[in-house]
Image (cartoon, rainbow, N blue to C red; front, top):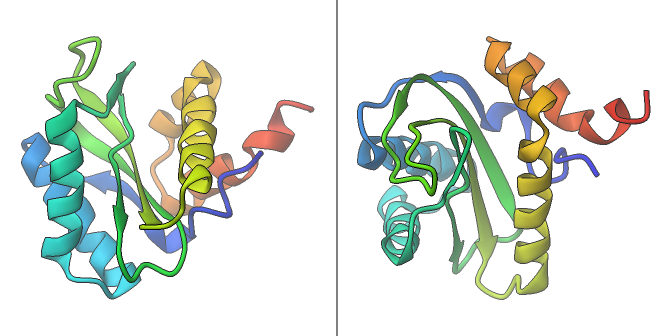
Length: 154
């Protein structure tokens, strides 16, 4: 199952610069604001509130921050590959360099959980993660994420 339905090529940041978890979340909120038209502060507050419940750093240098927003018409994703890893208080205490922000409408329910599960499945694939880490363009990363279902069949 490809991630293309959640992610557009303009929602991929191939070389994000951030010095901290907070700055990383602010940069992601700014990008999400440009894509959704929703206020940057509202997006930032939602994902920060979720982080306070427990880190969304899932290990292996990967984080999947997420949240639900009013007035968001559909589930959207934003993917960033960081130039330098940042401490994200991840489950394995390793710094994070790959981040997939998932935003869902307030009433998304099971679709939000299915999307999170899909993202986690794709990013558990060590070969996929290695290819993403070695890619330096949004189009290359998008192609990898878009083709994640078919590449396993080849």
